[in-house]
Image (cartoon, helix red, strand yellow):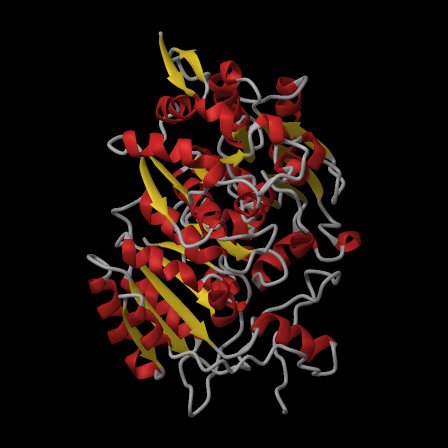
Length: 564
């Protein structure tokens, strides 16, 4: 046991928890922490971003891509509040993250001191738990508890607020073994699993739908075995892309507002809907009164609060999704549903939509992303911003592995992707990492290009530029009499000059014929340096199919007339 300052205790605890990379931005209230980070720089890599929001998204992306806990550090006041959007993004998508903020000294708390803010009060609704540490003797155990909470049960962000004087105070410190995270199970789970197994055996037309709660290596492995035993079509939410190999013939595409007709047909015709690790977002269920009306709903989830919240369950199993699927698989013999599989899985899972450009801008998002998929053999980690480009990335890239799509689903945070790609590449330095952005989202946090350049983080930033806020414009066209209020951007940004100003090799792609060559060059350069590509497309290419909000999933819009 040794005596350490609070700042040194923070670093020692991070190392104890297996943290090797943190993201952040220094300031007055965290000067002691940053002095310790200087001393511990051989064990903890710190990535300085251009803005605290970028740091929070980087910590989030690090966690999503790797499964490890992301860590972000910010100073008091505006530094702490700049984390709020990133914390909320992680909270909505159940991402394990620990945010460490500085604050004014204990004696100055509550006095409206310079750069003081009640960050624990502000973040209470968007964290699993948060702490303010006013006794240095409690600091180490608080950090350990924060990491445990972030990873136990339904994962999520935890905030630790540390007044500046606590980081300077001295306390006894000794390392402790990491408290193992126990698998969460519900009451009477064995009986519940037995009944679920019986329901599966009795089903003639089962349908497996998976959400973000199964999107891990353990979850994907359990799902693969389970799906083969059940012999059922498999669909997923946006957050579960890649948890089931999308090149498998049993995969029928994404379900929901921008999902496939095949996934919607299976929903209408199945007799057992097996929902695994999903919260039944409104973007998935459409009209809840018409959702899976011919089916019994079997809902498996770690969070009891999600059961019967949006869709009533005929039967539930509370527990870690991967653990439940493994237990179910032990109770099942090989099922066979040949007629059902032939009807659904072999009827095609295409979107039934063919995108077309114009004579001037003939490149389409479909061509762009399908070419990217082919050139990377479907193995890249794809990060996205939010909007049309996000949906095209989900529709046209064929994900094979869990954690392969890093995207903001629940909160829908524009500006998320570039920071998240930084974190993803730091977590997985040997993988190709590509951020697919619309030009609207890109402009929100483009300052993080300097982070790519400064740290030589070898990400491909692919900006799909249609000069509009495409998804909002699409809704305005359909539901607001084509009143394109504040969605026509036409910004004069020269993307090549912009990228080069940050020291990044940049391309402008305007013709379909050049698509493959430009992407090949970018992929080659990205082996040693970051790259920026502007891919210009027509502003009136829409995301289709599209089910209007609150409408039945079986009634998608397949074409939008453009007459202006």
